[in-house]
Length: 117
Length: 114
Image 1: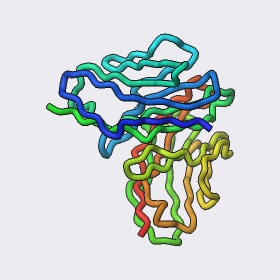
Image 2 (image 1 turned 45 degrees about the vertical axis):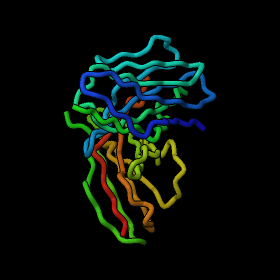
Image 3 (image 1 turned 30 degrees about the vertical axis):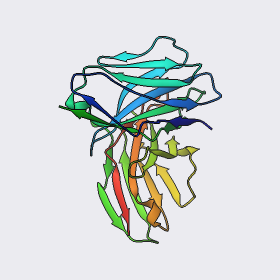
């Protein structure tokens, strides 16, 4: 079974600074997807960024980028120029790319990010 | 374009009762997944429905059951409620043909069991 570990329960960052959230995972599969989701307080969970395991290039979405280290099974999220609206719980998640579109998503325990004005 | 909707928003039940939660997927989506999120924890996968059949199931007892209708909407039923069933229940929809199967989440139903 796949597992996802987020070792930082809470992080804080000054507004406009950069912060990196860590995530490691365990799997025996070679093809899979990794995701970072954001869950603001009392609001819906939304997808921040995704990475396909067979792609070596790290994914980037505006101020959000990842550092994907497949051999180390590490998938960190970097948020640049942090904004107050970035304050939220961030979840790292894993999904197998095995055939069949119905594969479950495994989430980590989350990192609560505080942005200090 | 309506996103994922869930009802009710909040629910209070007592131990031993039964509850039904409802989910309407995002327009165009055909797959619905249900998650349980305890306070301060990450979502735990309960099960996933596609073509009105349960396709994947997490480590939850059979007190947790579901259904998917021809219009792709779904229900989560929990019987014999326990105090430990208190949680936020999230519904997520996706499109089975999409390669990375991006899931769109609803706002959740907050269930409190007294």
